[in-house]
Figure 1 (cartoon, rainbow, N blue to C red):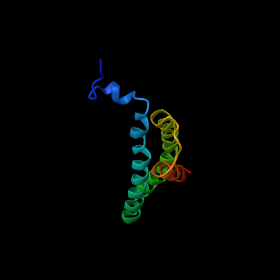
Figure 2 (figure 1 turned 135 degrees about the horizontal axis):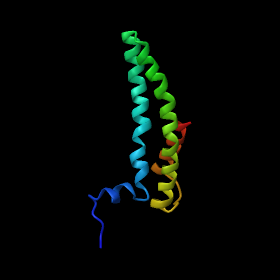
Figure 3 (figure 1 turned 135 degrees about the vertical axis):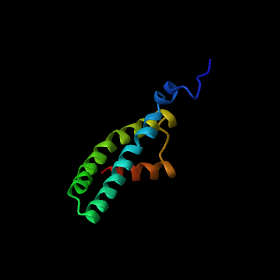
Length: 99
């Protein structure tokens, strides 16, 4: 019996799917931080600048499970194959931006 690709359980509980979902949070928080900073300086609004300030560490904290699930996805999906080419570049850039 095959599982339906439209079943939410199939998508959310796949061994490699969490990385794909979680990666959007630090990206969105980082982008929101930049937008709040620009708007706060433009409007001279301390609340927006404060929101920017708190979004930055939130993005940094949100990147930790992204790195962990990315490494797990590499183990489950690619069975720990040698990192080369795009996979190596993805790993290096992901770790660099998280640091």
